Image (cartoon, rainbow, N blue to C red; front, side, top):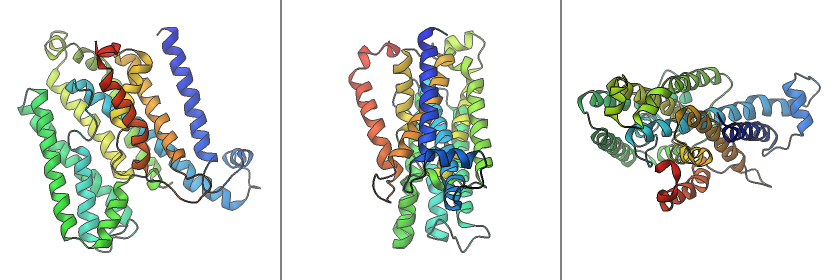
Length: 344
């Protein structure tokens, strides 16, 4: 690791800490910084309402943003490397569409609110999380099945896109027959939100996210080999078919977990890997994957802060904020592709 890479790690880590602290301090209700510190250290003299807001709302939301940003960014990096496509992202294989289909089936058929699904023997939000995870895993299973039958990554990419279109078609049919209030609830879920993970759900969410991130770290060597082509990777002793399945499985775990709890989130998985490459000027995954992870967390925490409307009690939808950061990055990458070092 050279001095430039080390300085990037240091600055990103500092930004991560500051943005995480900002997510705890800044919100619709103003809580002084010293009060936040006292609450986190267990001081019992702080106002109870502040304690409830911080521990039950802002802290889980900040942790969720941190892990979701890292998960989606790493997913995008894995898919861009696997398919050698700079515009590949977590939604490209239809995994996000599968999660959307699961949620649509629950919300549009069984019930119309996030906190109550009367027809199911479980709490409404738990039903939605389970449905999203099941839908994402179903699509992932289909993609992994085809990955063992199709040798070309391009063909696999096309199959993933077609499967995504089929899931979207089923969602449209469910929307057509659903009542207005159910459609409205589903649309609101689809706008994305980091506040969907409660303190009780946080351990499960954290465990799933960390398992996926750990698996991605174990794939660093095969990912570097794939940069030089599948034949070269096979000559190095990399089992390409098994590596492809592991990459898809890792992407599925990360995307399904993030989508199930936070809704379909746009642009983080697509744009953040490019931001990381532009910072490093390198595609070496030993350096790139940790920087992508840190950058994804920083971007998600920044979005979490921007979502809170200044001077008011309103909260912007997450997917109204992420394109403001992600779209300019993608436009810049497309326009300057010939001059960007890591493409050459």
